[in-house]
Image 1 (tube, one colour):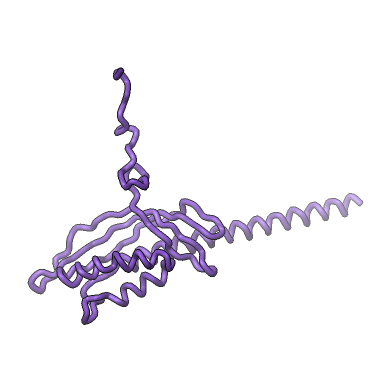
Image 2: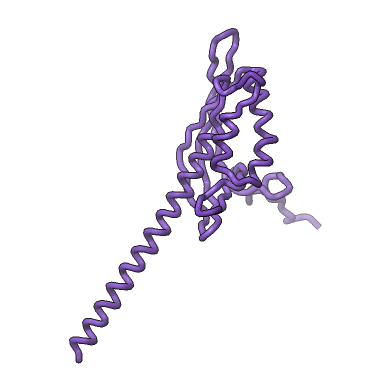
Length: 186
């Protein structure tokens, strides 16, 4: 009888270990998926230049590649913003190349995630047939993703400020050293 109890306990413990390892593997795989999709979004959204322009001054391949990794809801606002990039490229010969330094997961559940990504954009301009590179511009961005039909897609993004947050008003949140003091005021 004691042997049967011990065998049952060992079998239960083994089952729990296998189940926990599988859940941990699923969580890690999910984290890796959202980080990879975040990186793809930044690389696609931040890569453009004169070589992507068509005869009408648009960048259809650029738009298509970005839309492959974003939600239909986000695609509507992206289309409006992509026109500004196309105009810069067509009028000033601007080219942009991103460099992603790191991505991390801020939150993750079954159908939504928030990631953080840091890197830089390097712009260059064509002046009199010569490419003039600019200094890299660092970025820190929070990316919101949703899972649609089993695929993680970017639903929105916003810059992360030094204070760590941007409220809906668009004004930076004061850091503790910037918060006004009421001491000594009556």
